[in-house]
Each structure stands twice: as structure tokens, then as C-alpha cells.
Amino acid sequence: MSTNTLTLASRVMTQIARDRRTIALIIVAPLVIATIAGYSISNKAMLNNAAPGILATLIFFFGFLITGISFLRERTQGTLERLMVAPVSRMDIVAGYLLGLVLFALMQTLIMFFYMVYVLDVTYQGDLWQILVFQVLMGIVAVSMGTFFSAFARNEFQMIQFIPLVIVPQIFLSGLFIPISQLPSVLEWISKFLPLTYGVEGIKALMQQGQNLLDVGKDIGILAAFAVGFLLLASLTLRKAGN
Image (cartoon, rainbow, N blue to C red; front, side):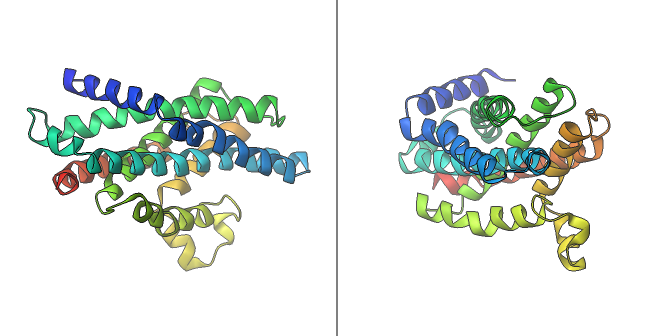
């Protein structure tokens, strides 16, 4: 990992830490949603079944949203344009933002996980560290997607418009509400090409069935492929974002 990447990551973390709105979006908003979900599902078995998918979905949703908005701010403030003329590669820029934002995703995962376990009384199986590793991978996918799609938005409102196009369909087709096997055949086929499908599937296996990372190797491999693919696409579209 290059010095430029670490420097950019440190800058991103400092900038986000000073932004109260973003911190509220990272910490407060997911807890509010988790609380509503937790107390609206009175049946303990149903809550335990839904909690892993909710955890994966919230990390994915807010990771995508926060990344897209943060990248847009960098572009509108001229920061990206200055970086593009500096002796820094496009991959260093993307990797620096990725590292800085993923650390906040990890913090968000820890807060939400312990909140669900100790406040909402959700029970789980499996090792905590393996659950966190998998959730970090989900955060990387979300950040990579947010970085890529931010290149096609000119303001925060346009970035938010991607949510019903990119995120909401994945929520309904990922198995969070309805098992994928019960979906119409066309929608079941589409779900195979959506990263959240494998995120929900993998986290459920870890938290509900007590499986380990090797057992969900297929889900990890597919999510890693999504992450690498969106990272490469983001680096290719970075010059567009800097214009």
C-alpha cells in the first residue's frame, strides 16, 4: 500500500470526523432504523431470522450513500481536480477513499452489531471476528459501488436518485423479505447478479447457522469480484468525476 493511499485515507477520515451530518448518518440513522425494526418485530424467532439481513442491508445502503455524497463533495469543491493533476495515480485516489470510508463502515458494523445483540437481544451463532470480516467486505462493495455511481451524478440529489434504481431492487430481491427460491423465476435469475444477494446469504449462514468463512467461500468470492470490478470501473471513470 503506497504512501499516497495512506495519506488520502487519513485525509478522508479526518474530513468525515469533522462533519456532524455525516457522523449522524453513519451512527444515528442506522440505529434508528434498527430500533424500529427490532421493536416492530415482536416475535423473537422472526427478529433473529431478520437481523442478519437487516445488518448487511444497512451497511450496504449507508456505505453506498455516504461514499457517493462524500465523493461528490470532493468533486464540487475542486479537490478531485487538484488530485488529478498531482503525481498520484487514479488507483491511489480510489484506494485512499476506499480505505478511509471502509474504516467508518467497520465502526458502523461494530456499533450496529452490539446494539442488536445487547439492546434488541438478538441471538447469533458463529465467531464475531468472522462476522466482522464478512461485513467489512460488504462495506468495501458498497464503497466501491458508491464511488463508481458518484461519477454520474452532478449533485447530492442526483446521487440519492440512484437509491431506488440501484439499492431498493436489491433489498427486495436479496432474500431479506422473501426467500429467493419463492421469487418468480425471472426475479430469481436477476437476483444472482446482485451483490446484496450474496451479502444477505453469507451473513445469514454465519450468524444463524454458525458457519465459518470457508463455508461461505462462494459468497465471499463473488462479493470480492464485485468489489474489484467496481473499483476498476471507479478508477476508469475518475477523470470524468474530476471534470
